[in-house]
Amino acid sequence: MKKRRRTPREKKELSLDRDCRNTVAESPWGARAAIARRKRWVNQSYRKAVHQELSALSGGEPADAETVESAVAATLRHGWRKQADVPLRRALGLRRSRLVRDEAPQD
Image (cartoon, rainbow, N blue to C red):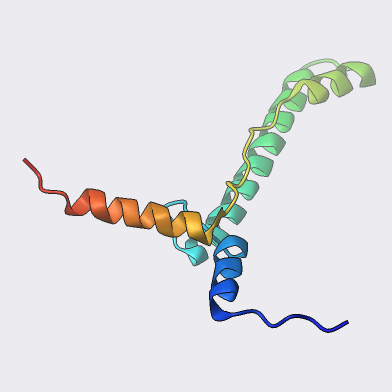
């Protein structure tokens, strides 16, 4: 079964739908660094909170295992998720609308 050849217009339409862009106010390279930094911050803050809980429990007398486990389980992580990238067609539309907005006369 032979694949059908696509016209340049069809290829462009597929590219606009499939390719994605980062629309957060960062360059792609800065976004990669920021994602790693945020993940690192979430894990570090969780480890710090657990350490503080454990040091508070081990103040004077030794704590039993159930108390320690429940205290650690009750410690919450900070929530953070990467924003999904936007299809290229939508990203270009957002850029176009920003350009129009910025070029509008200021009264």
